[in-house]
Length: 301
Image: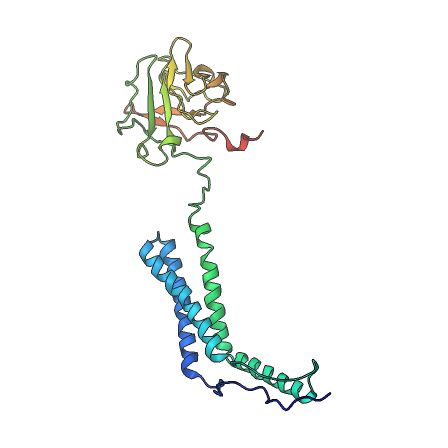
């Protein structure tokens, strides 16, 4: 069989694709703008975000990649169409060599523009990296030890919700008061810092061994956060000397360290050790010796 005398494959417009400095500059600028816009988008989002600025930067980041890729494909890649008429599937050796040479020229065009390839990789990589920011920034701060600690420290003065300092003369026997560590009565941590202060007697009270000094002049302080579901324990029954959680009816005996005597609460309310300073002000000896509230470590047990 013979092959017809068809023209050899050629570029239809006859343009020299090996030299396009203006287009290369345009593509390089587009990729560079995309990288810079992506970095700016990440910084803006990390600092709190501004929708209008973020939208503009996102437009530039995506537009830069799009313009660069389209211009590269349109102006720096050999263009067709290629016409070759033949009557058999297998090409002649000369035609196969011509095809190999054409492919080699295309590969050479890509290889000699390695700088643009690197810029394209940087633009796409930076935009891919920016997609991790919502996971890193929007999850909020790392909790650290905040699930185990409150703002009660050694020497913290007991204050009311209005900031008034609590003294040893504030409560009569049978009285109850909600108190906070001084300086934290109106903060996001207020809920976990709440303490219910009761006075079952006027003499020092010992609720458990090792707590001989925790109840001066009959004052006892316990976390107000119920160990069952985190509801506020705000009711005090003077006759039975018990604290009541109104949500699920858990009862805590204050004279035995707020041990749970009824209801679903799984453990006692943590007790805050107290002392009375020379001015008669109630202070904390230290923070709680155990985490307050419903224990996440106990869930699923």
